[in-house]
Image (tube, rainbow, N blue to C red; front, side, top):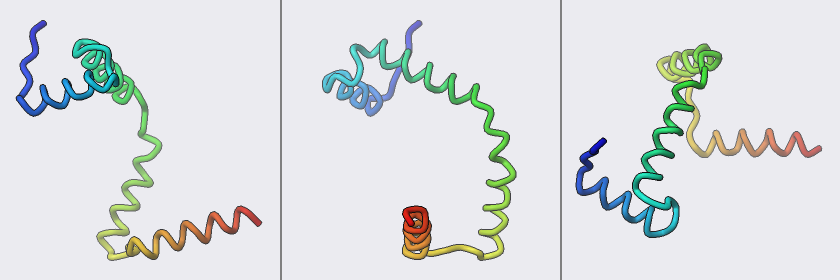
Length: 82
């Protein structure tokens, strides 16, 4: 199989082979395809109701700023340490 990549994709791939992340371009493609196959096989249907509710909340304007979200997470973590 021959695969054509854009110059940017070739550069990205060559850099990852050069830094040792992958042994070869072929190994990179095999790993990336295997990762995608595993992702596709994962059944994330259980999360759909939560995602739908989060999207509805956003439409209703029920959002937090980043600072508020971080403070909420920090408070929750602190409560677990007690």
